[in-house]
Length: 607
Image (cartoon, rainbow, N blue to C red; front, side, top):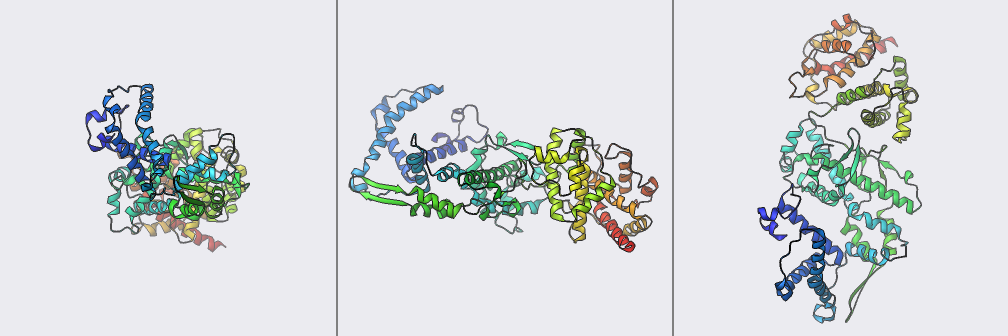
């Protein structure tokens, strides 16, 4: 195995079947490193001792007459290889290990003592407590911890990883497409002088966490909000990440290199939740009573967060008895019960559970320049389930029940997003209850804040309800002086041109309140489902609505309405024709805000 690490040749590459898709040298190097780790864990020896042991075995082999007499063999099937391994171990490895075990008989080696490590502690617990046949261990929490430690040890790195990702996603949001993110390296991003954090320093946490979990992701699948169940593609399994890797690896996504980041976070969050649920069951606590925290508000104190050396090794040392006896060597005895008690008190006390909605743990994802938008999602939904608009009376009642509470509106939208992702894949009868599906099928505890929406809405109303809630969210943000269209690129938010604002004001003054209210909703729906849709550069027939007159877009909506019914006559053809022609699709956010201000001004005058 050392040959391919030293140099690559066709012969050494051909040693592996089926052929490798990755670098041969890197594959064999990682294989050797994994083998060393296994020997380290199996023998309880330090890494340095493992290297000395391997050197000694190699030396003994080179001096052995049996080795010189061995004939080359074709190890072309599993049975032959297993037989060869048994003979090899019996001839060369077994005798060396026996000699090592007897070293304590020689005074010259008494100065060397076995190292006390967390790995040695957990191995001794497994051998002396868990591995005793016919006897069940009373230390169930410590047994659970030993099983999950390989993954839990990465949790303390999550806050730094989230901080790095939030910085990068804010910096590059809608400024990169997927190809650019693949071509740019992490080192390129780190070299930008405008960074507020040290990208390469924080990268080490990401790499360490990835190395902990990547093997566990091979057969793992996770549910996502928009893409259903996803798995890690073969191309990214055992992927080695460093500063020369694509920047896209660090930007969570359900496709491309970013799937590594997405699945790593989802996997670790789920492992944390599963561990805490099992821990609560073993300690007679109610898992549901643990406080729930969203990813955006997550801190290390919410998680089973510990550093193996700084936090756990002192507990190991505090619960061990180290003795030395002439002629017998060193003896290490651990107080496993004492360690378990301190583990519960110091590490596992007062933890939270990561927010989970139905089967999905929400993960913030990178928004690229040409990502799939809500227009595409709802087009797929309309192909599956015919959609109808909610009546004005029902809309008014739903909005009044929300009482302009932004958190309630946002939670309702998020729950509706998850529901839409399932329905666009599963389909369903248009008249089925939306509330029943969300509670009975998706097992959501909280659905839509409005009681009227819960009682009235069916599958056929999901698009109309989502647009209404999104509209209400933007109105609340605008009324509080915040950006109502923060999720959209600046090229979609150009200000009104000279003279257009005066024309728009004149148009509004000539319309009654009912028409203005309807126009405001129509402009909003048009922007979200039509204008903001990315343009496919490979589609020669595609039309970029940003540069089309909003008047023409509104007229097109009348000719091809979103819902399968006769168009609403609140705005007539004459009304639309009188709308300022100079206002384009890219002016919609500024137009919408101007109409909203005029509408609120008129409402106050009528009070």
